[in-house]
Length: 288
Image (cartoon, rainbow, N blue to C red):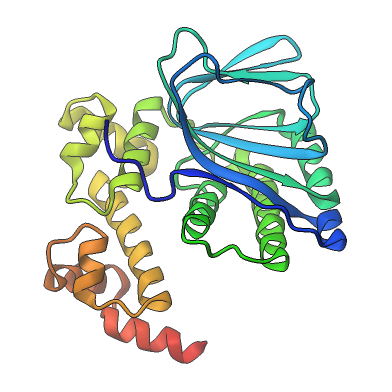
């Protein structure tokens, strides 16, 4: 089995500030993989009422039954539900694994926007792997794994921001959603999960199950980027975060984002951003 991302695991928070609980707050979040049909949640029988779940499929397949209708959840598919509710989500017998990320929130603001989204979009929503809600949740998972979510005000801000981001994404969905095929979603998630390794278009094509030639054409058609452009964007975005939020050297950052050395990283960074990593860091730190 391949190594799990560092964010893999489940994280729960029990903050006691009543004002923030009424506004927006995090209950739990995680990155999980289920391989047994014992994984089965019934929304009518749960004890943790007053909560709101967002769950997004990374790989494999799950199912959710809503008001008696079955929906398959493949990579790129997310669902939003309330607790309690007339639904059941589970690993079906025809699937050997289901990998997903999730976020459970509570609060009056969350309730209002969750209900507005469900009214307009339903419970099942397609998300591109690089959509803002998915990227934001991945960042929250990274912070949780590094114990950087430490107080009620901070967590409430994250819960509120995710809720607004989800609402904005769904409000604009029809304008900017291209319905990516499952193979393209798989390759995109592979790039996001393995950008720190020395991977390229060949590995992305292999993860999609297509030939390199066919994959490259399909990927460009649906994303408007070549596979290497897509992977480079992921790496440069991460490099920018590391330049501003850490004291890592260019050599360290190069290795952390999948490049062999600082010289090549510097060359790519300047080509994409128009400036060197050092100047970028200095400029951003001066603006803080």
